[in-house]
Amino acid sequence: MWVKICGNTSLKDAQAAVDLGADAIGFVFAPSSRQMTPEAVRVITERLTGKPECFGVFQTMNFAEIRDAVRTAGLTGVQLHGGVSIDLIAALRKEFSPSLSITQTLHWDINGSPEAANQLSRLVHDLRETGQVNRILIDSKVGKALGGTGRTFDWNAAQQLFRDAGEIEMIAAGGLNPENVGEAVQRLRPFGVDVSSGVESEPGRKDPERLRLFIERARAAGENPAS
Ligand SMILES: O=C(O)c1ccccc1NCC(=O)[C@H](O)[C@H](O)COP(=O)(O)O
Image 1 (cartoon, rainbow, N blue to C red):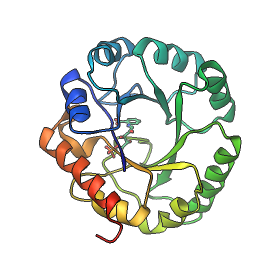
Image 2 (spheres, helix red, strand yellow):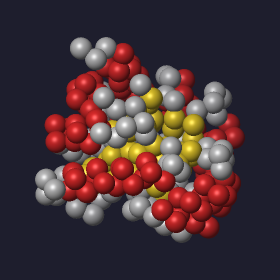
Image 3 (cartoon, protein in one colour):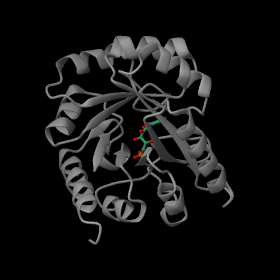
């Protein structure tokens, strides 16, 4: 089970996640209590020991802004959180191919209609067809909030979406924490999981014990489908 710890704001927290076995760490450039600048992230990525994937989370659709942040911050991947633009994905792929990992986020509106799941399925299909996206992350949308919400979506209703995704790597996010990640993995059988607020002691600060439990339980559930 691939595990990403998102919303890091310090070297101490990012290094703790890596030392505890996270595959990837994330930095939020979107408006948020966890928002970072590319320069501040660079200070962290330059000093990190280990070789995690380092993702930037972007809510902008501005190609130049993302391109410059990738270079300045020393990112290995982008997580596109502000909507789907095949043109933006193609431009990033052309600029960085194949070294940049591209994750497209799709949002499950927790107050949305049941038909929204069909729309997400079509989007997953279309993104897969482009062959330019490495992973798709399903996150909760709560009102206008597109990330870091701490709220889960309906895992039962989403099972089909994850099952039908085919070969593209699907990541589950939204309200995960050490207490519920095992159940989320059991229900959705994702390629990976992503967490931000569920392993914090306060916004922007990670709790080492919650980090440890999250990673351990996600991995255990991933290795044992029957548990
Ligand atoms: O984390 C944020 O504050 C955030 C704000 C705006 C857009 C994206 C954001 N985070 C991106 C992530 O990858 C989070 O891990 C994901 O949204 C899950 O957050 P949480 O429900 O707090 O675990």
